[in-house]
Length: 125
Length: 328
Image (cartoon, rainbow over all chains, first blue to last red; front, side, top):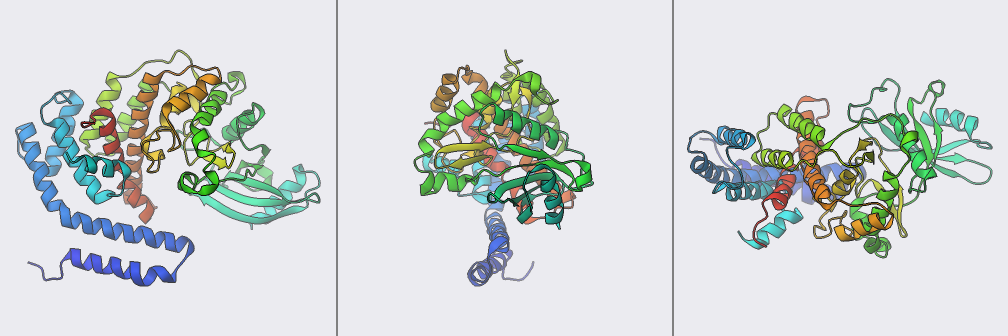
């Protein structure tokens, strides 16, 4: 077991330092790159916060859908293959719901400000 | 410095020109650059743009038409009254500037978010969807016997190509698989008519002024194919920049786009447009995957490229909204 602070806390501390203390000091292209860097750290923090829970839910749905066990990567690969072969499609019970839930979990990490995501969040299932 | 070579160049083909000033690089990867500069002239400065591949970067990527073809297309568009910069000069090897061309600089805005939010474009915005329809109709009508040599792509070929690109990423994505299946099941086959297709006609590749579309840029993906491809691509959600209820670049409705196109004497096939919108959404998603791969394996280890890889999920939600919409 590793000591604390946790990676989430450490990453957040760096992001806050860059955002609050460094941003006012630079301009132009470097300021743009700094903004990208801060966005990356924020994304990493969101992923560290959410990934464990969303992966566990995803694996549970994939097991039910595919009737097999495996890692989240293996199961995604298996689902991709079955869709490619036409064995699973939108008429398959649970597929659309699974893809929506998985995609919403990704957007929550990658780009929570994306307009399509905000619209679908407002729908609430 | 590039100004010395440009000065020698302009004095050869621009009567009265005495040199150039204010050269600045606007954008550029390893293989292609865009520069702005002013030609010094007794009648006043002339705004110009250089598009070039520097020396040693002659080979164009497989999908690109090449800078010579791009110059020819822009000039053809200009002559036909399609908003386009006038091509002033095609570079020759002895100028030591690489390959490419110099065109007249058209003033206006290309940054999509500014066009969608700034007050100076408020009057133009509601007119743009329809206007874009008219511009595309003009573009699709460019005389085929005058076009440079271009690759030709049917819907079926494009599906196979994207399938291959996606599989080469070794990046299993159930939503992309679903989109590929949908595209195969809805492949409209050969279009009744094959025309010039711009290939990257979207908000971000247009110069917009207070009066509307002033120029169509970035012709490097031009090819021959189904004209409905351009109408579908301009509607891809990634180019609406947040204005998701206005499919045409965040400006307006498909109905306005179609009306503008048909008012200019050409016919719209809405089912084909939808097909190409789905294809375009997947295309941008796979391109995001390509960025991830280049970030990981290539020399460009930039943060920007890494973050574009993380935008593939945006196209996944948009594909689901198109193919498996929830409630309403």
